[in-house]
Length: 226
Ligand code: URA
Image (cartoon, rainbow, N blue to C red):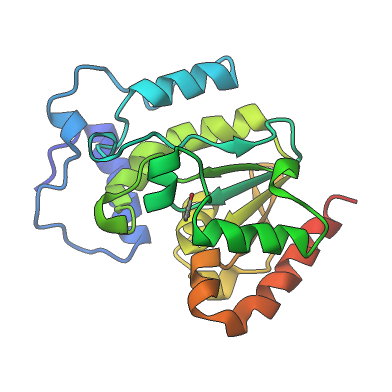
């Protein structure tokens, strides 16, 4: 049973299909759509990064904020040409309020270093701004609810390159149901921005044999800067 508005239901149906979900038997309506004190305008445009940041800091756009210690908005240089997008904050990120500061973050730092970059040379964010309880993958609903703000985030940063870390980010940004094994290393476009999907550092920690492929993706990404 879906209880969203017509417009939201249409977007959700598309995303359920996209994630291979044929039927939804539970009422997966995020809490804020049931008893929201704030009206969420899916088409909202922000005039500055600060305005978007303030809005995200104070609004539960997808129902996850109430479970989290901190909102994890971003880290790095807003004027960078490289914008990194991960999946969702984990435990350490939730504690510190910054993306990629745990074990995955350490590996991400090494991946950047392998091509002569540091995190300060980049701008880092996630598809959702709050840690999902128990570190679960964000649900299609939660992703759909955050996407208008992620798109605004990209528009305001206006990077040359998007480095998409893992399948959740790649599927959401590239609007594809293809898995990361298939999309990684293929230079795609998000609007007119080059987007390079690669493996998520957390996956590489579990499957270190795949690091060489991720290294190739990093080289491809770096070459796009020249
Ligand atoms: N994994 C992510 O996708 N993002 C983070 O910020 C941390 C871990």
